[in-house]
Length: 270
Image: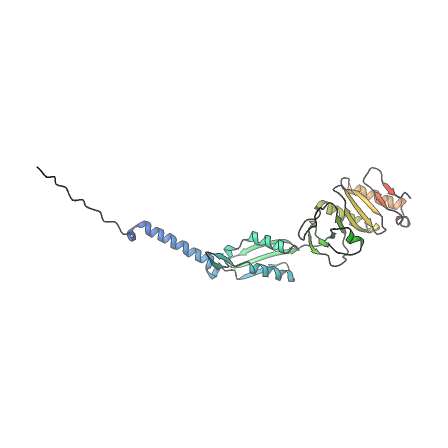
């Protein structure tokens, strides 16, 4: 029987991993990534070294700087870092505005490589808001707050300022600092009345509903305004009535003047 001859199988030797192009490309990519990660996150070059708060020289600026300083340290891969790239400007702005309701405007800008610039403006009071009318009638400022032009309360009213005082009976819950207690359109109406009714010295503005605003005067009587009618026409009608039919000596006898309808109602009729 004839034997078959098999040619020996030759095994190709595997190429060393160190000679493979893929290994070196991957290693270079990984090393580059690690180097950039260290540069941007952990190197001293990009660690926040300064915080600049512009727009205020008051104690408020120092408090804000302290808050920002305390929130700079972040954990990245379980290692602490103050990298400017890890600063979330939007979140930081939100925290500052919530913590300091007296701040009305705030911009945060990163100045590379390692400076944070904060530009802020404090709210300016245009009125005093009290949650309950009782605070006005008793002559105190308990539960009263400073109000800015946007209708936001931002600080307790600690002294009797020469500002228009107002209440809003449409509120269902007691407001907190930083919340809006009156819409801007109604607030503008109140400020307009304050400016145009100096001769009857408004003491208090009471928002009764979305359609009615009461104004209590220094003489004790109230004027009822409609928020749905022309404010200018109502002011003109009131001033004309006061000048022609209600001299100062009669005004102390009044309880109210109602301007909400086509006909003006005066009670009691004098």
